[in-house]
Image (cartoon, rainbow, N blue to C red; front, side, top):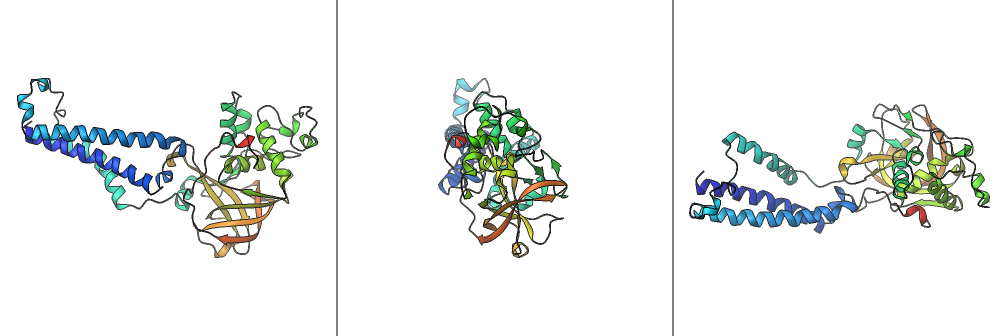
Length: 342
C-alpha cells in the first residue's frame, strides 16, 4: 500500500475515534449521558472518551508520517505492524461502515429518553417483579442468597395485555412466591413484625415497609424508587388505603379501560439496553384525556384491581398534574436505600 493510501486510512480512523470522543463529551456537557448509561457506568464511559482521544492523536501522527512518506525511510515499520491489514476495497468499506453507520445515526436522530414505543415491544411490569431485582442485588451485596428477595412481585403485562403471575398476595401481606406470612418473625419486640413477617432474605424489604407503613402519605421519589415500590408490592395488603404520590410517563395498552393508564418508569441497571419498564395502574376519569408519554405527577389512594388475570396494586387518583420530563428519566437500584429513612 502506498504511503498516501495508508495515510487516508489513518485519517479515517482519526475522524472516527475523534467523533466518538466528541459525542461522549457532548453528552456529558449537556447532562444527557444518563439517557444511555447508568450512573455507576458513567465513569468508565468518560474514561473511554479519553482513550478514544489519545488513540485519535496517535492515528493522526501516523497519518502525517505516512502522507509524507516517512514510513518508507523508517526501518522499524518493515514488519508491517504500522499499516492496516491487507484487504480488498469491499472489506475496507464494510469495516469502516461498522463505525460510520452508528455515527451517522447519532447525527440524524435526536437524543431522547425511552418511552411508550419501547414499552409496546417489551411489555409493562405492574410493580415489584422487575424492581425486585434491586432487593436481590442488595441481598447479594450483603452476602445473602438472593432467591427469596428476587421473588417479590405481583404481575407482568405484555403488549397483548396478558400477564403472568410472579407471586400473588399472601395472607397478611407479601407474595406467595416467597410466603413471608408463613415465616415466624424474629423476637425483636416490634409489634409491626406481625404485619410484616420476614426471613433473613426479605428482612430489608420488611424494614423499609415498616418505615413506609408509619407514614400518612408515601411520596415515591426517584431515589429509592425501585426499593420503595418493591417493599410496597411485597406487603401489598398492608398498604391498601394508603395515600401515595408518584411521577412517571403515561403508558396505555390495548385492553385497558378508558379511565385506566399506567404511570411508568424505566428501571436501568447499567445502560438503556438492559432497561425494563414497570409502574402502577392508575384509575381516573382524567385518564382518557392523557396522551402516551405525557409526564404526570399522580396523587391518590392505593387499592387493588384485577388485570390480565392477576391481582395488582392500583392508584385511585385524586389529583393528576402534567409535569416536564425530568433531566434523569430513569430510576436506578440503590443498595443503601433500605438502611435510610424514606
